[in-house]
Image (cartoon, rainbow, N blue to C red; front, top):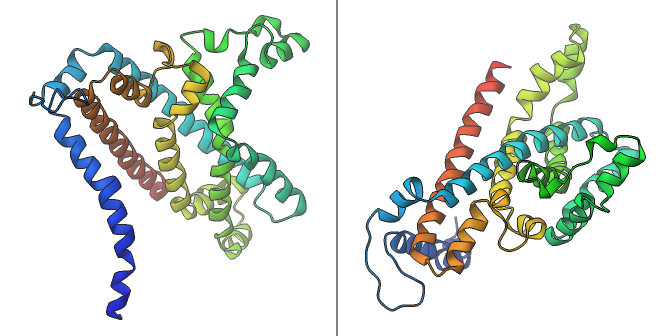
Length: 288
């Protein structure tokens, strides 16, 4: 390799160090202090911030609980919906191409636009959701939607699924189109049905695509900051508070040291969940 080629990664490496590595190290430094973000001096509190998070901070634990509920619904239903759409639209016909574009369209909208669209749908008085239910004779199923504290986080999760399912569909389509057609032909000759072909050929062969979709969907569900604010206001009420909005609120209260500790826990949760998901996917696809 020519020595000059080693020069090309330098700009990207410099940007990474300045904007990612250094701030991450500073977050570690501030997480063990009581820094308010403005004072020139601050005191070390050791692991006090982390102990307080798990033993004496009901707001943080509530946000964590909400985020886990949100993530579970989004990962399961968004992945399943994206996979179903990809299976039905994998062929490169004119109709499939048009439908792909239709399902992908929400992804190009801004999160704020999506939030306001669904805020109108969820409005309990004149929103589209209750109006449709009443129009088809299902008025007893009308809901307060975001006004129902026990259900609010799940309605936001449905919005997230609608928002990004088309994006994940494209990844699955790429994975499905990479499966050799000869495998399906051989399976049909051996008398394997559609379900057998899916479990023994399709599912193991799209393992890389599935890993990408699940990991990306998980990260999205922890970073649904603007969608939560658009639907729940600023700051969101307790029933809609997730980790990203809780960290924002802590920074806004000039508790920078405490917010830095929350941010590290936030990153650790995402990393742990993604690693666990990857191992679980490997196990299920090996068994298939």
